[in-house]
Image 1 (spheres, rainbow, N blue to C red):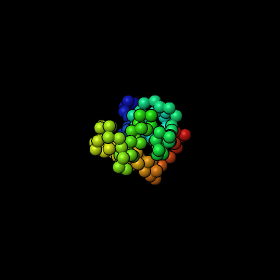
Image 2 (tube, rainbow, N blue to C red):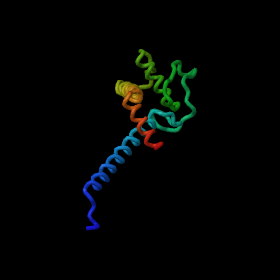
Image 3 (tube, one colour):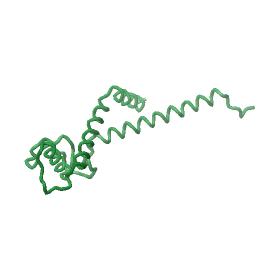
Length: 134
């Protein structure tokens, strides 16, 4: 009889394990979102290590709002040039598919920014910071 575990205790333990698992998932998801959108010293597009962030240069006559490596910064500037009707015809790879890829990447960045600004995400960050303090 001494080895019998009360059903209430067993249910409480299972509930605590589920809550801990949900908290871990929240922490991992939040870390993932923040890692994707935080300046980590790597190119935001390709992920290679890069020089300190440059927002514009004489070479690129536009402001570059992302932390790109030199290659991706050049490709971004070319993308903007292409959608404004310019572009270098020698860069044959900058076709419609290439432009669509850049458009989708920029749209994704915008949606991640909106998600991070949402009240739900801010609530999640608050829950996690409360959990980690307590």
